[in-house]
Image 1 (cartoon, helix red, strand yellow):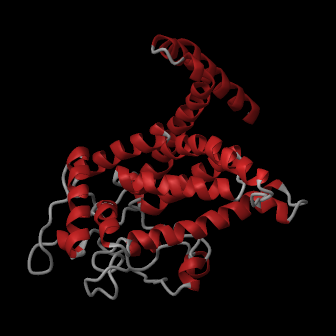
Image 2 (tube, rainbow, N blue to C red):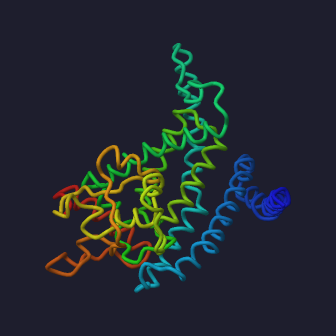
Length: 326
């Protein structure tokens, strides 16, 4: 059965490339990039499969055990647009393969000077592939934790990242509700880290896919937790919802200063080690404090549509850099 699905996927990829992608590449004068386009076709299809799987698995769960009824269905649709951009645009994959030749060039220069680039697997040459993959996962997740904390620490960066937190109706598509500049920064940093520690391209793609699937679950509108022990092993929807809680997940002790809790992307161990974990039983309301009406907030408008949200994010970045975050 698995082999049949693999063969079917390959046949669809070949047909799509031959009848649509390749003719377009030659028409546009980009024939020299057809090999890259073939890989891009594969990941376009993988993105389509991810979208279908998320909808078929998480959408029924949201209908069966929702945290709260959706008050703004247009906002969920807007999050779906972000997901299309992310899953089918292949930003992180494209950046990885763009930076790969550059990193190889730098590595060649270092070797010429007698400096051998670091490779994580070289520390344990007999490490099984599965163990190597898990090691890469842990290292990248550790770096992702600190990257996430930086998004909540620097005023200008919070101006961008607050768009992600402004969804008051969190749903299975909300993970991808990010400012494009914020996404670009993260994808570049994570790709450089992956290349620096020697992650093979195939494993990087698998790491990205696994991380995206788990983060979609975390943001889903589902009343799910993993229990006292499980929530210390893997970030659950309830644990991450606390990170999105109004006046809690993005503020230090709810005092209006940047900070927050539950920054872990996949593994809560980093929150436990660095004292940023917060466990609570309820499912808090999500959003940013300044979205609330006065006197609790300032009724700030984060925008309705995709482009308005992007523009307002740039304006917040400049505003917060000048005077500090609210």
